Image (cartoon, rainbow, N blue to C red; front, side, top):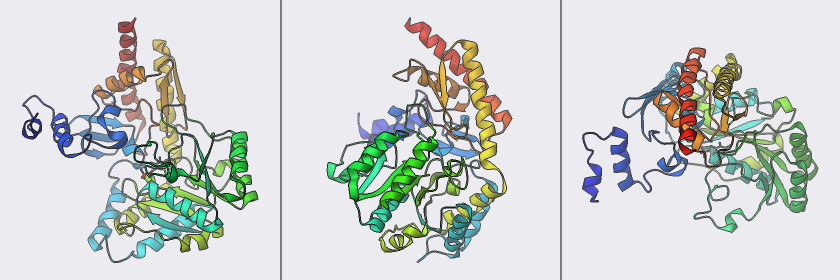
Length: 420
Ligand SMILES: *Cc1c(COP(=O)(O)O)cnc(C)c1O
C-alpha cells in the first residue's frame, strides 16, 4: 500500500475509516493507549466531531447518548453554557501568560473551602501530573522512598505507574510495594516490608480496575490505611482523579470518616478543560513548597476559570445526587432487561460511575456484542471500563438509552445462539 493510496478515501468509506487510514500513516498504531481502535468494540468510532449535553456526534454525523463523558472529564454535560462562558471571558483577557492570573488564587481558595482535608492546593494539567506530584511531595516530606500501591490500580501512564512494561525499567518502579485493594492483611504486610522507609500509601477512591467488578473500599480498609500512615508518619494519598466530584464534592472518603494528607484531582474538575490539582494538609505544606514541579501550561488561566465555574455549580446543585439517581435508573433498567432475556449480568460500582459485566464472558465477547448493537441504536456504553454519568443526563435520555440497550441484549442472545 502506498502512502498516497491509503490516504485517499473511497466514495463508500466512512469519514471515520478515512481518518483512521490517514492516521495509520502519521500516528504510530493509528492511535495511542486505551483509545487504540483494537481496544474498542466493533463499530465504535475513533473520531468525534462535536458534543452537547449528554449527546456526542462522530465524524460521520451519528449521534449517541454518551455514557463515557470523555472518560470522566465531562461532569456537567458537554459544553456547559456557564462553564464555557467563564472560560471564554478568561480567554478574552489571556490564557497562557508569564505567570498565573488572579484566578489561580481564587481557585486554590475554592478548593480549600470545599475539601475538608485541604489546607492548600496547587495545579497541573493531567491526572498523572497530580499523582506523580503527590508521590514526590510525600517523599520530600518524609525523606523516605517506599510507596505502597494496590495491585492493578491505575494512577496514570508515566513509567512509575504505567500499566504496560514497554519502555519501562524495573528501576522506574524500584520503590513501589504492592498490596491488594480492600485486603487489610496484605496492606499490613506491605507496610511491614517498607519498614522505616514508608513514604506513602497511594490508593484510588474506590477499586475501579478495568474489566473486573468495581469495589467500594471497606471502612476497615480505609481506616487501616489511615492508621498505618499515622503510625509511620507517612502520607495517605487518595487518587481522586477519576472519582473526584462525582461521589462527594468534599472527597470520596468523607462518608468513611477518613481524610487523606494529599489528594490528586483531575478529569472532572474543569468540566472538560485540561486541569489537575493536588490538595494537601499542613503536614505536607513545606514539602510541597520545596519540590520542583512545573509545566509549560500549568498556569493556563482558562482552565482555571472553567474549574471555578464547575466547582461553583457542584457546590450549588447536588451533582452527585442527580447523577446517582440517573445511574440508578440506568442500572435498574439494565437489570430488568437482562432479567427479561434470561441473561446473567453483574452491575457494580457507585451508580454515578457504573459498570455492567456479563457472566461467563472471559473474552468480553458478550460485552462487546452488547455495546456494538447498543451503539448502532444510539447509546455509547463501554464493555469493561466503568462508565460515567453527567448532570446533563435526564430520565428521558436514560430511557432512550435503555431502548438501545434492549438491542444490545438481543445481540448477545443471537451471538450465543450462533455459537451453540
Ligand atoms: C485517568 C486517571 C489518572 C491519570 O490521569 P491523566 O489525566 O490521564 O494523566 C490517574 N488516576 C486515575 C484513577 C485515573 O482514572
